Structures are given as C-alpha cells and as structure tokens.
Image (cartoon, rainbow, N blue to C red; front, top):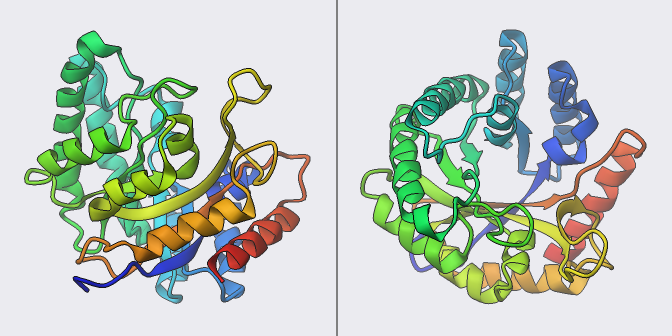
Length: 299
C-alpha cells in the first residue's frame, strides 16, 4: 500500500453515541448487532467488555461481519483510578498490570485496535520524567498486544492546556516521541481527534500531516474554542455551531486525510463522529444524524 492515499472507512463510536447503555454489556452487544445490520459502518468502538458471555457474543458478531472492532481502555482505567503515566511507581505498575489483563479480554472479543490516552500533564518540570514512565508502560502493554497478530495499540493525544490537560498533547511533539518509542513498541499508532487538535490551537491540516505516518484512526469531534464562552473545552458536543466542527470543516479534514500517505502496513483508517449522548436523548435518532453527517462529509 506504500505510496497510496489513505482509505477511510466509517466507524460508529458506540461508547459515545450510546453512552447511557455502556453499563449494560448485553445492550452493547445488541447495539453492535443493530449497527452491523445497517451495512454502512466498517468499524465500531466500545469500551472493554468484561463478561465472558458478552465477549463471546461480541467476537461472534464481529467475526461474522466486516467490522473492525476498536476498544477503549480509557473508561476502565479511569473507573479504577489507574494511570499509565503516573509518577508513582507503585500506581504505574498496578496500572500496567491491569491494562495488560484488559488487553487479553479485548483480544477475546476480536479487538483489532486497543486504544487509550495518557494521564494528566504534571507540568514542564516533570514532563520528561512522565514521558519516560509512560513510554515504559506502553512498551510493556505493547508486548501483550504483540501476542495478537491482528491487534494494534492506539494512543489518542488530548489537549495540553485547555481542558483535559494531558501529558500527550501537541501533534508534533507526539509524533516525534512516538517515532522514537516505536523500535520498542512497533504496534503503536495515533488515534487523531479534531477537538483536541483545535483546543491545542493547532492547524488541523498541519496536525494531520504530522501524524499521518503513524495515524490509524480519526475522530471528528466538536468543541467550543473560545475560553470566554460557556462549554469551552472537550465535552463531546454535537457537531455544528457554536463549536468549530461544521460540515465544511469535516469535509476539509477528510479531504486532507485522504491525500496523505498512511502507514503502509494498514489497509484502512477508521473515522467516526465522537458525540456523547445522555439518557434524555433519542439514541438511535442521534446515531442516524451522526451517520448522515459522516456520509455527507465523506461523499
């Protein structure tokens, strides 16, 4: 595939679009079944599934369809107050051990993309120390991921100063750091997110080009970028005003992404709308609206 442009395929971010259902693993599996029946999506994204029957059911569902399964470690690690970039060695060891356990559970589901974020940025004085610690964690987790030939490890850079204030943030820094880490963690890739890039005050097209050699996934995520406005930050809001992610911006992101040369070993790059729903929402109506937005942007 070397020398070719990126092939983007649509993904349904079930963990966000159906957020109120995430506490019920049977409902997650049922949602994947219904999503697969649409015949549009080529991928789905969930949290980690812990129930053995649900893992088996999800694996069977994924195996019977062309769906690429992405699972996010983030929810489980946060719920258990774990942190892979912690400067506390005991907490980091505990976090790594748990992440490796969860990676095995993900493999039982047929997961192709195991995804995560870093912990909080400790500040400039200790940032290099935290980066080294997080790198060690990723190498250890990568060893587990490498046991599964079809699985890769994805890291999503978040915003550094606006809202989430994470260790891994700016695109150029992330790309350089990850390239240096890759000899020891060769299955590590970037899950790119438009909201965090915009909140970092980076140009979207520039960020895409910087991340392209390691990019395996994209999220079209909206945010309010004016610190003086209510809702400033990354709240997984609906696309459109008052956020920056309009239909035109989404098309521009996809146009640039399609023009880039992806990692040569990857056949497809998944792309999803990231929008979180609440119990008051009509979940399937929101899914349809996101699907139509993504279809139009990719047309």
